[in-house]
Image (cartoon, rainbow, N blue to C red; front, top):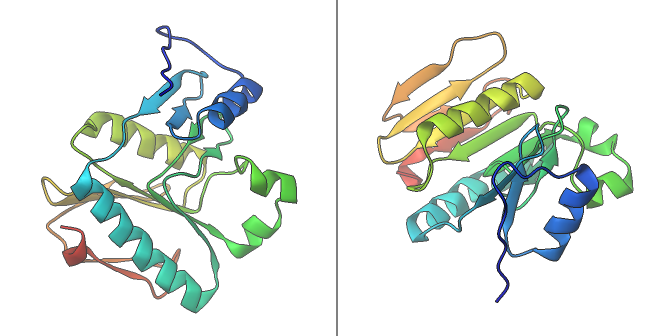
Length: 189
């Protein structure tokens, strides 16, 4: 078993982040725009089950439409501000994905997804997730959902719009970003 200890406020370059992630493939590692490392704990059973339900619905829709690429929570994206973030589910249009080089597709894709989902787990604070959603907005997402299963609340993030808060929704629409997609939250709650 390997352990990693990180001094407070420790910062890494992009190359160092790549080396750390490669050497510690069993860890979920992110970094913020300042290069500070964020080690995320593994999820519990209920969160893992919810993540699987979310991913499955997106993959099925995307396989039918072929409009882009779906990514799971293991994928780190290098955002325009330099942060490396791994949304629980993310999606990139086919056109934007195809613009990347084969090398960029193999490492941390240098773009912000068009769509992201963050699923709150018991170890997450709502404030840290809201800050992450704002970071996605600032870096170019077109639609983002913050799903809080404990409180049965969904926050919807879109550019130049106030955050919409839905209490106990059963279905979410992908709107014009994910044409024809509807997320069945009954399978997630």
